Image (tube, rainbow, N blue to C red; front, side):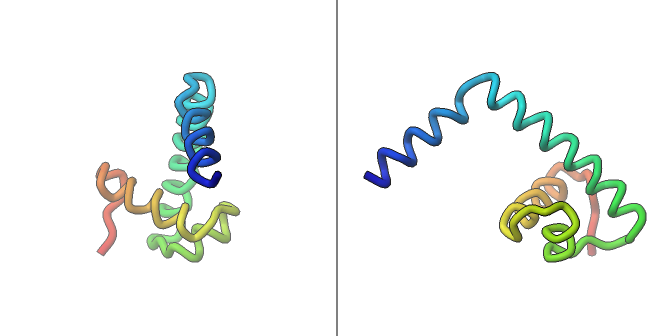
Length: 75
């Protein structure tokens, strides 16, 4: 049953309207994270999770995505 539930959940993400909303949210969140980065000069996963009310895993994913896209550079 879990596989069926997971499949249905993934199909809902394929919906163009839902996907568009998700992309808009991600772009807005990334812009807010960039502002935060400019102010703090550092990004720590735990701080991002707390500041933006997202999971630690979500914060780590977004941070890594932004690094790969060269939106941020951390040492």
